[in-house]
Length: 246
Length: 246
DNA sequence: CGCGCGTTTGAATACTATCAAGTTCCGTGG
DNA sequence: CCACGGAACTTGATAGTATTCAAACGCGCG
Image (cartoon, rainbow over all chains, first blue to last red):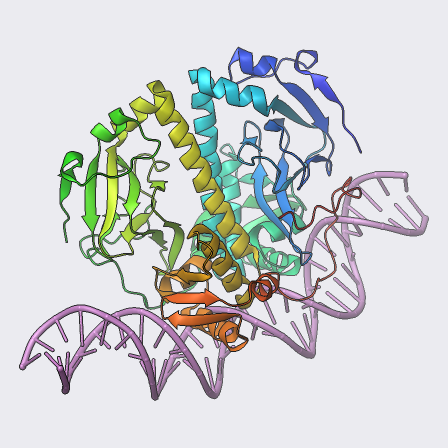
């Protein structure tokens, strides 16, 4: 299904946080439904994309048929800028009526060179991207389904900014979560069930849950009891623990 | 063990690729031995670091005692720039006599704002960092020890730029590899043994191996036979496969 | 209302982590 | 130079966990 690219000016006023006027003049805005591809793996990467509203998953299909969700994007997140030449991933809308601003790469890269505001903006977005990638890396580093799912929930609760409320909404399916944390769907379900049975979380709707016991969730994230260290710790790390920096 | 920070000028001439003169004037150079910490988790992050020679691992100790290696750094790689305020990881030298250039964060961030050359350099380094993080994410996405280790070896072969020669050297220990791919050391060893027995690789020394059959390694990386797709593929991805973008 | 997709639960299997022990490698000190 | 000792590396056996196959359930949407 093809989508319509509208001129930026045709869209209702949108808060262009930290983006220059010149940048926004070059933009177009896309509206897409859940499941629509913003771009596909293998296509030429001619644009940068910024989410205005909704949510997007960035994913890839391995040759063995396994899908991997590399990142979830939320409003104000920039994506597509790190893939030169050809897209190495696909980007697909999660929420219905997702709005995305699209910037021609040529213009964007020129502005980055000459407009300090755009340069700063890109720097911030790139660092955010790095933070998200590291967060997922830390999730995948955990062994055990409970630990991974718990870590994901805590990360997502923080990202979706669950403002004061402990209710978090999951725009993505269980399959998306499973492919994000690299486990089978069934395993994710079972982990959620365990958490629910222990009353650590409560499933309001299928895609909305409430964190009842955040401490228990933190504990679950850390897994079981400490195994003995088997690798040589740093030569000079005796003075500081280096553990559990918050 | 404390290390000596020498003035940049005291060190033999080093190729400052793509870094401005002003940037290098603010730099100091550190020489450290294998195992030395460049910085530790929890410390204030006051500098940027660029590897001049040698190799470094970026890692973190979970509260449960598990170590996780988040990245391996090679010459010209910049690191430490994305961690504001406090370091969230530790950085430790892998190779003996590793040389590292250190830039005061305050100066570096000022130069990034006003020196286009430095700005470009940071952008490129940040993108490289993103690429490495994504590469590891793809490795961790694979299920099966053989697939993960094979993927790691192929990635590393490409990074270490095994120029024409299929012999690649591993500056890191098996423990480092295990913590990088998130598996037990024994599992990594067994995977290497299987690859050796099938004559896909040959172990020259403990930390140097030769890729004998790159195609077999690629196949091992892809895992077994394709499982059926269980998640809903993209709504409009019928026209293109989206699989196996090289 | 019913079909399909997403979700959840249930067994059997396959795999990896773990524990344990042996071997090689390398730096250190005699 | 050689012997020693510790760390890294490798191999084996067992137990625990996730994946897989299978099937039921709920929910949204036509």
